[in-house]
Every structure is written in structure tokens, then in C-alpha cells.
Length: 373
Ligand code: GLY
Picture 1 (cartoon, rainbow, N blue to C red):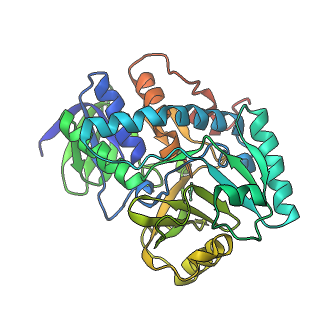
Picture 2 (picture 1 turned 120 degrees about the vertical axis):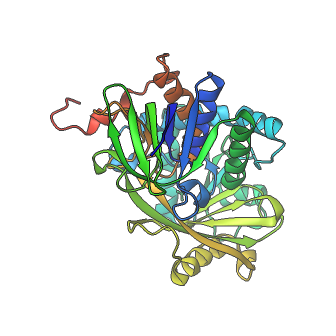
């Protein structure tokens, strides 16, 4: 068997692996991306593309929530330029939208929870405010009269993750970065290199290796990244809503060509990327229609499932493991949001530069037993 060699091999063809490859190519490294293909699609394919640090920073897990918030805010601030550069380079379209999002409440308890969240995000430096139901309806006239209050995050943005992935792939192809469609079967480590063999029977060697394969079992270090399945659907709703709505039990994201993505369920495990339950979609649709009654009878365009890469403390894992492998995975519900900042930080780490963000809170060492802090 002939072994092919690279400076850096990135295992994982989702948004984290692709943005990292682009950042490393910017710095002149010879890289290959190993992408498992449609049988094991990345979480990116299922994602809604909400770029919303104010809503998803893992407070509930008791991990480094402040650091996750700041990672998200930093990456959010990069997205406008990142999307524009990607489109200019490739001629693609990533459907970047910058008109904010609304978290919705119907009942007092939901308003109280959103108010607490707004205060927490404000304390972290975020630009959010609570508004009344009527103020929310001024922004989104199709909202139900039952919406009593909303958390308005005017700086939140969104992209279409599938379009982003297509543009990233086009960018890497133009640059001559090799994207190998293969599934890694086993990995080994030599003194000065890492090697791996694919299910397809090929053998590769790389001076440095990056694990960016999300929830793919068997590749993740120490079993720390686990699948959190999400099911979602797209309905037809051209012009009904203009910004991301986060209602109790469903979020609604208007996209190009009149699609509205409605997501998403959460189920820890199973390792099932594909099956979608009619009951799950019916539940999401009912919750979406409660927020926007005009969607009650909207035509369904598509339904799908995907696996988020969850971690025990809700924070991503970025750093070097005990085998000298670089890790960029476990971004859970925020892979698309976190991608530009992750790519810059991990590329810098790999090449011996100072990362532009502090990666200490995301180190895999935080899970090692006996570690202080
Ligand atoms: N960030 C949205 C989701 O994971 O469903």
C-alpha cells in the first residue's frame, strides 16, 4: 500500500474542518481534508446557521460559559467579512443576513427567563434588550397576538450553512487543497508523524493531524464528544418573517428562495444521522405555528436530521491531546457561529503562532482527572 503524505491532515469535512483548512492555506501549509461523505454528513449539513452568541453559550452545563459567549461574540464579529470574502473569492452566495433575532415569550415565566438571560448577556457586554409583544410585532407583523414579550438581539446574524459549506469547498478547490472523500478506519502515531488508514484501503501520513470530525464515534478523544441528534424541517414561507425567531419549542429562520427552516429537536444519541420522526416534525411545526399562525398550513419542503457534537460541559474542545493531535471539535449547537474564530485560533496554534483568542478554557486537559480548576 502506498502512503501519501501531507504537512497537515484535517479529519472532518464540516464547517470547522473546512474553515480551518482555508485558514491554514492562507498561511501556506500543505493540507488535506478527509471528508467522510454523505453517509456520515457533518452537523453543518443539518444546521440552521443562526449566529447567535446571546442565546447559546451553554450556561446550563456549568462549564466555561463566559468563554463560550466571548468566543461566539468574537466569531460573530468576523462573520460579515468572512461571508463577503468567501462570496467574492468563489462567486457563491452564503445568504448572510444581519437583521437580528427575537426570543419569544407567551407566559410570565418565559418572560422572566428571557429577562434573566438579557441581564446576563448585558453583563457579558452583549447588545440585547427586552421589548414588549407589541414592539416585537412592529418588527415582525406576522407574530401571534399571544407573544407577550421578546428578547431582541439586533446584532445577531445568520447564514445558510449548506451554502457556506459549498462556498468553502469551492474556495479550497480553487486553492488546490486536497479534499479526500474517505472514512478513517484507524489512526496511529509515529515519533514524528501521524498515520491513518481509510475504510477505502488507503494509507496516509501527516506531520500534524487535526481531529475535526464532530460527533463521529471512534475518532473522538477519550469519548468526550457525543452525538446530540436534531431533527428539523423547511417550509415554504416567502416574506412571512424577516429575521430569526426563537419561540418556545422551535426556532424559525427565513432563508433564500422562500424557505423557512424550523428546528430543532434534541436527543442525546443515537448515532443516527438520517431518520426523522413524523411526531418530531409535527411538534416543531405546531410550535412554529403558535408563534406565526400564518405557517399553520405552509407546505413542507424538506425534513432532515443531523448530529451535533456535544461535550460534557457544553464548550468546544480546542487544543492538543496527549498524543500530540490537534483538536477542533465539540462545538455542539454553535459550529457555524464559532467557525471563523476557531479556524484562526487553531491555525495559529498549529503553526506556533499566538492564537488571537485564549484557548485555555477549551483545552482537552480540562477533562483530565486530577487537574486543578
Ligand atoms: N443552534 C441550533 C441547533 O443546534 O439546533
